[in-house]
Image (cartoon, rainbow, N blue to C red; front, side):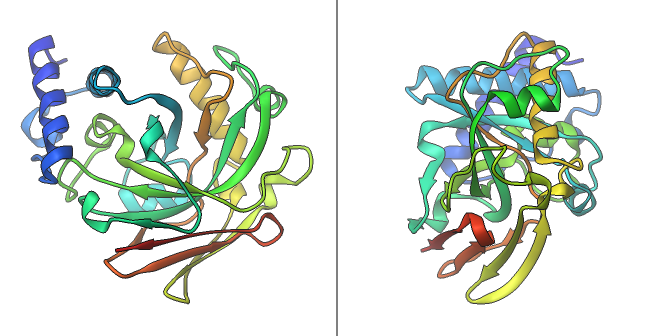
Length: 261
């Protein structure tokens, strides 16, 4: 377990890393005694300092929910992070590539809640009942901690590698579509790079949301009406570079596009 002074120091380092675009050395290497709870304590302090600076919390992201993502990262349990208002972009946007340290893109579904959702004991059916609509989304991953050799404590402390999200396509009520069978084709510069089906996220994308509600309850928190929840990727992360155009085709649910410049 880490002391309070060390947690504050790490949170300050991550705030500075976001400004300078210079990742800090791995926390798991510098603090081998660091636990998952320590990492969430760092993230929560980082979040509060961002809110004090004027950023507004509008939702949460869930990461590492699919075998594709767990295999790609070598991490075997889900995690979560905060989504602030300035992280939410609309389809067709131009994204400054230099804003992010290691930009990568994932294909996801975003759940927008119609009412509060909390654990313990939250179920998949509770999530579907509390959801106003589901909408296609791309997540842009960022990294304030060096990438090589990262462990779960590095990822959690780094706000679950959340950079931004791009929403688009056609919003759908959760009972209007079989969410397990929502599929997407991910293009970079007109070339298919990844494909995936939403059932790859814990067998049902809403499963990640009820996991999150129960996990937040253990930390004395919950999900609020109006929150946007990124439910987890069902493709591997795609590296993007300056000049790349990314397009995700969700079939009947439409498409999400952005360009990095």
